[in-house]
Image 1 (cartoon, one colour):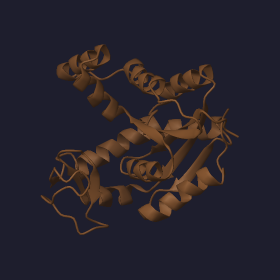
Image 2 (cartoon, helix red, strand yellow):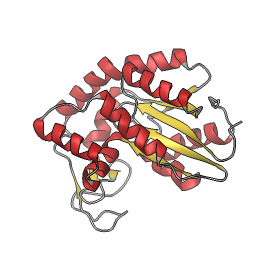
Image 3 (cartoon, one colour):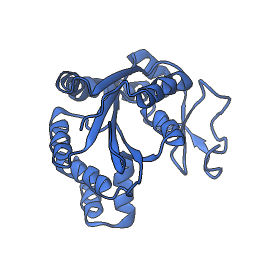
Length: 233
């Protein structure tokens, strides 16, 4: 059992558009907690002008890749700034780690912190991913994603969440770019998922990411409420 006053680090893994971000929003409507994604952390540090943000901005402007060390520093910073809780709370991690090297860094940190953690993998076929991207819209103000496949929303509609931005179709949400991202996922991330499934036996669960949002959430909620996924202590 996870002790009160501690966070469960729940790492959500899966292909692009497998539903991780949507499920994070649903989970945080039901359970206490917060979330981390590399993209959001990058934007936050750049906006606040932190030393880490300045390093990241310099790398991005020069066209260089953000190193594993910097991504890990972003993760550690977010983890160390978690607000203390009296009961139990979730720290939901979206799409990180992405490689076996990143996983080993994360695992070392979690062991040093004596943290409770588990992994949830969203399983989904490539063709479903391609359909989702074809129907995806994003708010140009709050960056929340929406789908034309499961709603009547359309381009240029006002964002139903922030009520400020307009829904747009991102330039990189095209089939060629998405297929390249999926190929990169197979090269770098899929081997890590297999490695985690083998290494973290009992602390790894798989859910069907191709189901509807409600069906997938029911499965994720069941994992958390019924403790069908073990808590690594």
